[in-house]
Amino acid sequence: MERKIKVFILGSEREVPWNTRVEDVHKMIGTNRWNALILVNGEPAPDDMYLEEGDLVAWMRITYHESPVSKDEGL
Image (cartoon, rainbow, N blue to C red):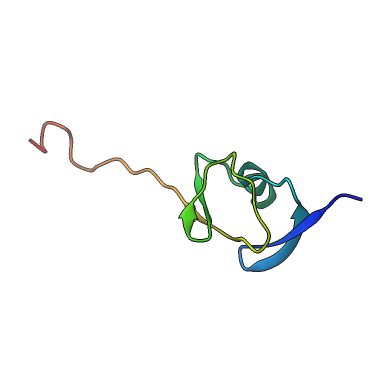
């Protein structure tokens, strides 16, 4: 039987395998590291970080916008 830990992902308690990493959370919630920043206990977390019992996991969407001012106009 695989060992599980309880974590909170997006406000819901979930049981996940003990070896769940942040990159696995991206797959669970349908994001990737290029469009979302995963926060574990309020801090940015690297993709290779393992979750621990009781961790609080949230995410922030990353968006890119081009400046309406051209490079020459901004000088």
